[in-house]
Amino acid sequence: MMFLTPLWLGALVIVPLYVWQVKRSGWSKQGWLLASIALLILSLARPVLPQKPVTAEEAGSDVIFAVDLSYSMRGTDLAPSRLEVAKKLLYDVVRSDQKDRFGVIGFTTSAIVLSPLTKDTEMLEHLFSSLDESQIITKGTNVMSALELSRKMSHSARPIVILLTDGGDEASYEKESSFVRDNNLALSVVMLATNNGSTLPTSEGSSLKDENGHIVVSARNDAIEEIVNKGKVIRNTRAGEILSLIDSARENDFTGKTSVMRYQELFYVPLMLSLIAFVAAFTTVGKKISRLFIPALALIGVSAQGGMLDFGYIYLAEINYTHGNFERSAELYRHVEGERARYNRANALYKAGKYADALGLYRSIRSNNASFKANIFYNMGNCHIRLQEFGEARESFLKSLTLRYTRAADQNLRAITEVKEHQTLNVRKEKNDSFASEENKPTGAKKTSKEGGGSNMKTDTASGGGGDEGKRAQSDPRFSMSQGKAALSSRQYELINQRSVHETKPW
Image (cartoon, rainbow, N blue to C red; front, side, top):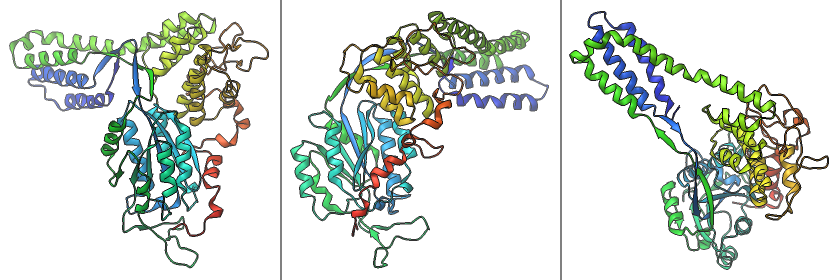
C-alpha cells in the first residue's frame, strides 16, 4: 500500500496534541471523535494499491521551442526577467501537455539543441531550472540559425515551432520568412518584451552601456512578426494561450506506446470507519463498544507497522540476486512498495532476460533525482538494445547523457550509432563486447561472474548514483554537472557564445 498525497499524514500531529489537552471527563465521546478525525486524515492521504501498468497507444505532434538566450533576454520589463518568464512558460506548458513531444533549442548568434524531442517532462523541467544565463555573454541574435536547426530536429511534414524572444536585432526578416514558408514550419512567436523596453543589468549591478558610454535600452522588435506562418503572435505570458495554439495546430506526427500506472483506491475504507466513529461518539453504540476502542487502536498500530516486513523481502531479494536467482529476486521485490524497489525489480528482470518486462517497469518509475533518472534512461537503452530497437536505444542514451555524463552511456551510444533497426548486434558477454562490464549490484549484493545480460547495466540502489563514481576523474568535462546549474555543459555554453566576436551594434 502507498499514499498518493502523503503530506496529509502530517496532520496526524493533532492527535497527540488533542490527547494531551483532553479532559478526563467525557473521554469516551472525545475518543470516538479523535478516531473519526484520524481516519478522515488517512482518507485524505489517499491510500492505494498499485496495479500492473497498462500500455496505451498514443499520438501527438512535434513541438519545438526556440528560446532566445541572448544578453537582451535579461531585460526586466517582464519581471523578474524575460528569460525567467520564458523558462516559467516552458515549465507550465510541458507540465500541462502530456500528448506531444517537445524539443528545445537555445540560440543567440548561433543555435544548439538543448533537448531532443522527448515526452519526458521531468528531464525538461530539470533542463529549464538549471539553465544558467550568467554563462551566456552573447549580445546578438541570429534567428535563422534557430529556424534551420528546428527544421533538422523533426521529420514531421509541418513541425510546430514556437519562438520565445524579444524580437532580435534585425530591421527586416524577409530571408527568415522565406525559409519558414519554404520549409513548411508552423511558426508562432511569443513576444517577451515591451514597447518601452528595459535596461540590461550587468554582473556588477550597473546597467549595460554601448561603446559610446550610453546606457543600452532593449525594447520589443515587432519586425520579427514577419516570419509568423500558420501560427500567431502571442504578446502575453499565459501558458494557456500557447496550449490552445498547440491544440489547434496538432497533427499526428508520431505514434507510440506509454505505460500508465493504475491504482486501486482505498480511501473509502478509512472514510467509512470515520463516519462510523463519528456516529458512535453521539450514540449509545459508542458507549457499548468503547471498551474495545483501545485494543482496536492497538491493531491499527500493528497494521501500520506492516511496512517493516519490507526489510525481510528486500533481504531475501538481495540474497537471491547475489546467487543468480533473478526471477525469484524480481518476485520478492514485487512485494515492496516504492520507486527504488520497482527499480531493483526491473534490474532483476533484465538480468533474467525479460527485457520487455524490465523496460515497462523502468518507464513507470518517477523521480526528480537527475542522477537516478540518468541511470533509468541508461538501463532503458540497454533493454532496447537487447530487443534490437536501436532508434529507441539511441534516444534513451541521449536522455541519460543530457542528465549526467557517464563513459558507459557514451560508449554504448557510439557503438550503436550506425546500427539500423532490427539489425543483428552481438550483445553476448564476450571479451571484445563493447557493452560488457561488471554491473553494480543492489545494496549488500556481491559481484558474480554467473550473470547474463551484461550491457554495462546500472543497478545501484542505495544512492541513485550512476555506477561510475569511481571513474569520475576520467569523465569528459564537457558533460560534467555541478550541484546547482547542471543541464548545460561548458562546451554547450561555448557553442552558444562562439560568434559573439562578430557583433558590432546588436541593439
